[in-house]
Image (cartoon, rainbow, N blue to C red; front, top):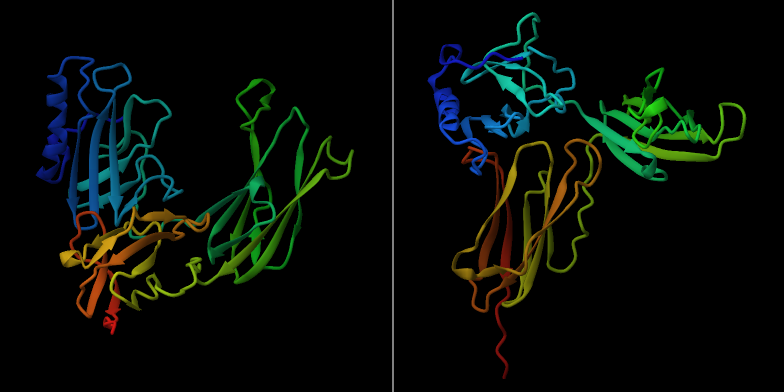
Length: 361
């Protein structure tokens, strides 16, 4: 396990704030209902959070979470991450100690490595691995991914039913397959249970479409015809196209490729704005409220998505505005995209032209 972090192990005095939590926690009576002690530091694209969970109990654990450009640096984002891998941060070198299945001990990133094993340097600016995990429930669907995406198809494996899966067809050269699937036996007696599975792995190497067909038998392999086929179509594209609602009337759709929109409405009319926001970028969408209530939100904005299973797939944010009775002839509805700790970033906007009122005779 990790040695307790000490001030001499920190390259910058900024982490004094974090490590100062320990004596404060120890001064509290055991079993106190106080919230989990934690502290955060942020410099540019970097953020580090230190927290003590279940303090004062036998399950007390220390958690060090590192984020870069809005992406958590862990084994999920960086599958090759291993114990004692290290990263250079504004606060010095931090070492990865893994995430234990037990709540106690140290988890995540700390300034002190585990002894006995040398790690490799991690550069968070490298794009996280692109992964797409599919299941039997995706039978009959078409899934869009980008080139270089690793695709996993995980199918239930039950020894009780003697279910045997095989890859029956992989059309074309769009995908390459790993020779042998990965199996996971259940911890239940004899290795069968609802959480056992077999996983097939593919790599999207070329643009185009490929059909994956899997078959399973109800008995031992070769003893019976296939009971069912599961078919999934993979569409490898340059850029995933978010399914934005079709523009109609006073609807406006915004995205990174179309950050500006325009609409013409009468006083008292409504405008619907649909904003596509890519996942994995760390950006949060912020509406800049129009001044003087010239355009008021109707209800609560809703979020739809992500639009696919691919890491980074966009979600769609839906807004509806009611234009005031006496607005200026032109104004803008503005959205800011910001990462934590940043005051600048991309901007989306809708230019609203208000029709002049025609007086009744």
